[in-house]
Length: 207
Ligand SMILES: N[C@@H](CCC(=O)N[C@@H](CS)C(=O)NCC(=O)O)C(=O)O
Image (tube, rainbow, N blue to C red; front, top):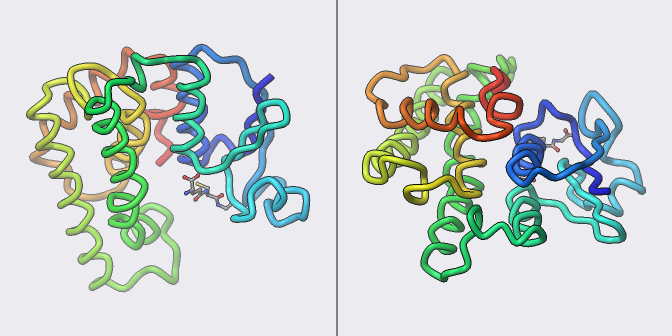
């Protein structure tokens, strides 16, 4: 059976849990990562040299990097409704997933650690303001795309890209920032309620 290594509170682990719900995949999970089993042991580093979660084991095959893992699971299940095979449609899904993992992810770091995690080393007001502005600018890109599609991030229907984007929107909603002026994003999160796993793994209040 598919094995997921990673604590369920981790946003990146929750991408994998949510994908399993969409794919109706059975799995077992072990709590790894800070606060649980350390990822710095030789056995863990052999699975992921980055000392991070999530990691999956599928028989003899081990894989790390959350967005790659959910692509792998969709491919393994031939779930073309989540990860289409036509080149333009697939590229559109990849585009939003890659943007989430790079630009969007980078935009929130300081503000998230300051405002949500309340870490004492991240309380410089100037940095908080700069990162909050950058995060909001990235959220405006999501808002614009959702205004255009009227559905989901890569088009009319739910795809793999909505998993990392949905979790990112949830993180933004759970962070004390101004959320006014994002009606398409709020409507999107309402639409997402119909997705299996959304309640448990995305909009469950965990940023
Ligand atoms: N790019 C990686 C990032 C993974 C990551 O940042 N994982 C965090 C948890 S969300 C982690 O493992 N932190 C160290 C720990 O918990 O021990 C991915 O998307 O899988």
